[in-house]
Image (cartoon, rainbow over all chains, first blue to last red; front, side, top):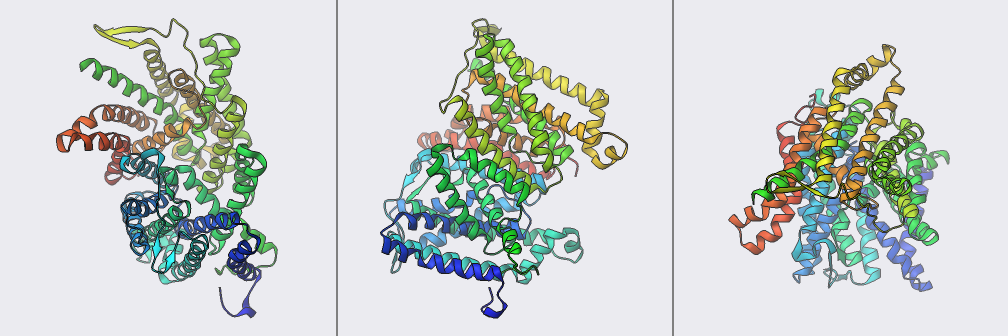
Length: 324
Length: 304
């Protein structure tokens, strides 16, 4: 997002409004005494961070990974296991979540990226299932049932046990993620990644080692999703294998597509829309909300592939393909 | 011990054949239509639910099973005509998304229609007995019969694909869709046929396994993911690859669960082995998949 207001289109104005609204949520919550909204939006922020990391490989890299939630689980368990052993220092937990998830992503990526298309989708799903079973096998840490974190993380003066501090910390991580993804996507590295999506053969002919670029992107996406996992563990004060269930991976894909694949802010809109729709439908329809939500996803896939991006274009947003 | 081994080997073959019934349809759909169908496991589940209702309605186990098979086949064709056929020309992401939505819908739909609790189907007395397959080795007759039925279906599939004109078109479609279409074959009809066949096989698997497990929402998903592993190992579009990989994985998975705890005890303490063993056993097939990928990225029988 350029800081020069004169160059803003509809999309930039919306992004600006969105950030303003997100920043005002704690104020609203404090004034109205409604603490539920802050919990709900915190969840949306965490999903948005995870979805943005997926968007790097799926939106910009064209690699449909159906196992991204495994990195949520790995990051969550990294933080949760440290907390279990009494270390609640976030300055150690978050880097650990980042590195462990990144390491897994590097190994799984190196294997999965040997394949293309349908194979890649199935293999990422299969590896996620494997990590899921590994989580179920962690008997010391609650196995199937997961475990409750007795204490949330502390990062120096920031205490994530406080609802508002957790919210603001998630928002800060989110904004940093947007900025970082913007830098990555528009860098030479990002250009190669996007080039390989539209024409792999040409990029290879130009001499770019496409596999290595993709592996680097896959590793970064996994590592960053590990951070989201550690945040999710803090948000719920709970980790369980359900964090990396394949439905969770599917949800992340839905969020990315809902918000408009290929746009930096897309996953943020997608995550908010997802959480709000899920919440409202379950209020109205109790436990049968999937009966409406499932067909909504089918319709999204069939008729609104560019998600909210189409909406912005309809409203006169820019069509020059720049990411903002 | 040898009784246990024989019994588990048979269980393994049976599990392998079950996975094969799903994987065969899936691999053809992948190979010919280049389409990812995550909802294939839902057809397995719906077959089992149909069997529950139809066996109850007709009062006859055999008749109910037959009707459930055809009902699932019809259900699959309707699903293909109205939703999935619009996805063939789309990219994989759309297909993943749409079929993911379908899974959420079907999983809830069966709960609304049949209730949230798991259902069980009782076997008729003549099928519920055990017979001696080898002197001193009794084995449930029903499990033996589903193994034989699955083998017969596999043989029928082999005949259809390699010996008939329809099979020739299916193979041709898998290797070059556009060319088959250009030669005047109604490709849409071929797609519907292949999809219906796959749906019927998935339904049959669900119908046959319903009496020995429970019928519940989401029962198809674990088998579906195992079928994915089989397809990755066997190679997309290869029914032969799917068959070999299914049997191999069924055996490895079943025997792994039987022996891994003991094997782990050789290298670690008994307490550690009882934790690591089962976890490792459930991860085993994925580790094998990883190994095959390193060796042959397009699967054992896949085209490179």
